[in-house]
Length: 281
Ligand SMILES: [Mg+2]
Image 1 (cartoon, rainbow, N blue to C red):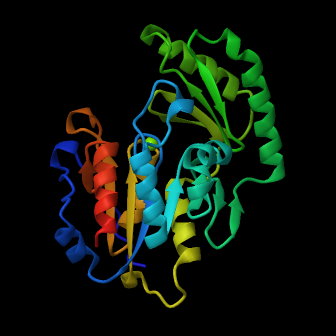
Image 2 (image 1 turned 90 degrees about the vertical axis):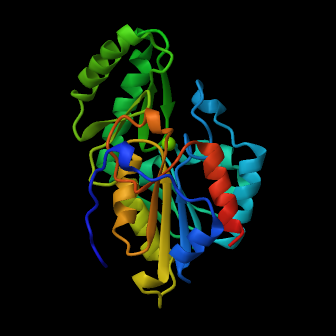
């Protein structure tokens, strides 16, 4: 594998992804395409209530067509049951799924990977029980979203002056348990097992399991599209492959941090246009 560690770049230097099929055909140069996609903020806009992040009919149609044409992986912080509802039965069985930030992998070839041993999982379950019990004492507006492998504390509906309170209350609870870590996303604190595993490692694991046995790295072209801090692991992993596109979804003015992504699309509507264009190649 050609390992070339990527570097963080300021958002102002990030090129907008060309949306002309010819440019992409030239980039692909005959290699086999593998597409990995985050869900929230990438395939759907970020919405006030996480449960309402439903796929638009247009995006759904495009995804269905995409899965019929290319190997597609969905790499999400959502748990398997939540993402299954959003993607629907029509799509979920046609993609490789890395749910819970890659801790829960179900691949197109039927192979699965669950990260975390029994002891770690039982300790985590006790933490989740405690958070569920104490959530009513957190500032108003907090809501919990549970998966088997992480528990998200959403604070997008909490008053700004109380965000620090949410953070310190959660940290205090986490500190009472061994082997857990807090990861921060857009208006969400996620607690999960403190294991060296992430979306990027999940992508690499899936690629190593679903690519054709005779494929060399030069035969494949890997695309990852994501919008959040946790997607940086995905960008870094994809950047290791000789042929790749790492794409962050963000309006220029909102990307207030450096990123490992090498290209940018403005919003899920542009992601839709880009995916649709891949269908025309
Ligand atoms: Mg996202």
